Length: 351
Image (cartoon, one colour):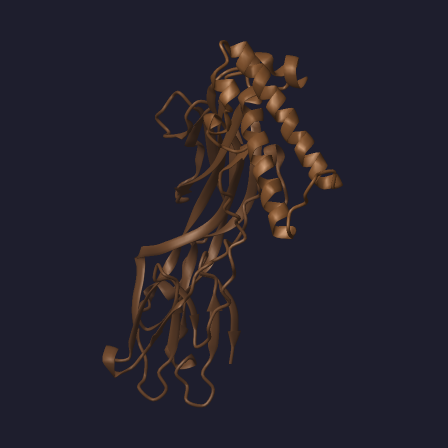
């Protein structure tokens, strides 16, 4: 998927369905009738933001003096950064395009529906794709979250001032480093009994050093959060405030003026709904419906920059047609069909 400016991803024409299709079969139990819906195309925007929390260590003023480090956390802060915005087309069931079609009892077909009840395929299991979106758990830097005072020595606790405590803590860090180096080089009176013991001791030394070092450098905790916003394309729209982003609150509502707006623009490029068709005069439940979709361009804008733009197929801009039912319940050679569950378009028909 192509990267766009500001690390935003392009709008995919079809979203990956990481879910199982539901199979329904015509039979006596349902009077050989199958109920389904055609899709209503939806633009789904996922925002990935990072909440960053920094905390100073109690000895940060002495970091350069005792550890020779200048890059430290000097104040307690909490702020947000917007990392990525991904857009993809998905769908929900169109309440105005629900059907109940009946078949003959001789060779009743099966349908596969999405969890929303949208027709996906007839007489064949549709290909189910796995989601490519990676859910990233919160992470922290530069080090762990061990309580500071779990590693304080008696000498530190009895020190009469913060400066003295910092000096003792720094000496303890250097002793830990020296002990670790001696273990690695074998310059000790007695080596650990085996590899696991060696690893355990090294881990303990690393944890102690990390906790003590944080007292000088401070901590930075990063937590990634994902939020999803949906937009249903209808009439053409410009500068629709899709969401707002605040440095101090992250993703906020469209009415919260504390955040900068991110706009969505929608322009129709092909509208088939106004075309005259004899299909409109037919009983909608006499056949298996599908859509020849229209098209529209969706773009995402922040400030003066277009972050992403893509033309997609849109079911609600299309024309509805029908396959005859005998195509699928034929005793000798019943047809198989796969539809696009996002746009309602026919992807494949095999007989």
